[in-house]
Image (cartoon, rainbow, N blue to C red; front, side, top):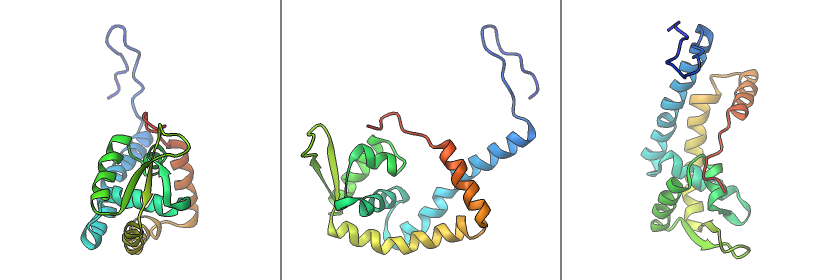
Length: 162
């Protein structure tokens, strides 16, 4: 669309040029398709969604395998409400326990149990193989650096991150 006129009271629209359109359509295709490609082996081999894996993985790498829920939501790239639902399911499976933060009772801590650590440890190899095969191996070192730089620039903090 080349018409840049908006309706009365609206600012003009800067339509995408071909290079911008190519960048945008490439990015949105990745955003929509990549999670499914990474989740499929986790579901098949371990019964985990990608988000569940990311939650468990972040906890496994945290000191004392413990994080505040808000921090965990940010690190796992999800909202607090989505995290709360996933943590509830993980609690039912015996993988996570929630407890008030002893240093500030306004916050809730998520703690990875030994059973949770076992499942994430087993799933890690599956996840790394998927990441390598789908994302990293087709790229060279310069592409890895560019991808990391772009990801930092586009990093979005959820509104409910606290």
